[in-house]
Amino acid sequence: ASFEWASTNTMVLEIDATGLASAVSPGETLVSFSANNITGSFPISVFDPALVDEDSLRKAQEQQGTRTAMLKTVSSYALQGTATLKEEGGLKLSLSDDFATTDALPGLYLYLTNNTNSINNALEIGAVEQFSGAQVYQIEGSVELSDYSHVLFYCKPFRVPVGVGEFMP
Image 1 (cartoon, rainbow, N blue to C red):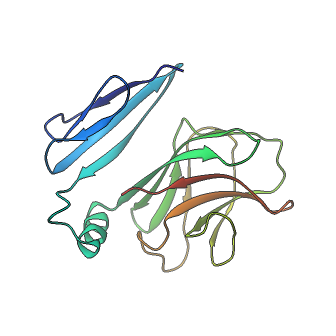
Image 2: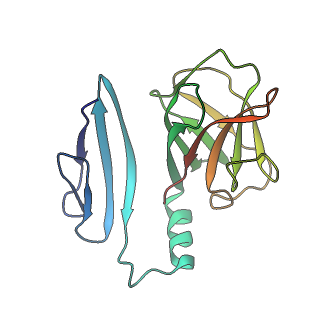
């Protein structure tokens, strides 16, 4: 597929025709992409690495209140789209309208995790309700935006990971 990329703020981030992004200055922008009639976008925060330590990055994530993950398959089953973790009257996990996976898997579940190879110590969100399109899952309990690094799609009956997305920033 041939992708088209764009940044809404080229004073912060420039993207060339191949999709290579280059930071220009600290700030916020939205990156959009399209290919084969599929479009999407995700927020990007650019920081000066000389000025940012791990605590500062975590605080910036919490202030922004949103983390985004591009989904990819880790199995022979199709999975694509974007997941967003957002603080909005509690923590919510949203799958965007470009989300799609197969309905051939029984028991496909969503997890928040720091280990994409296992559901040990992962937080079970629940069964995937729809196999394509936008959807929102309310996350119960006292979970912070920065507690987990990945969203995991996992087939419970066969005990195998199907797809994953790493939250950015």
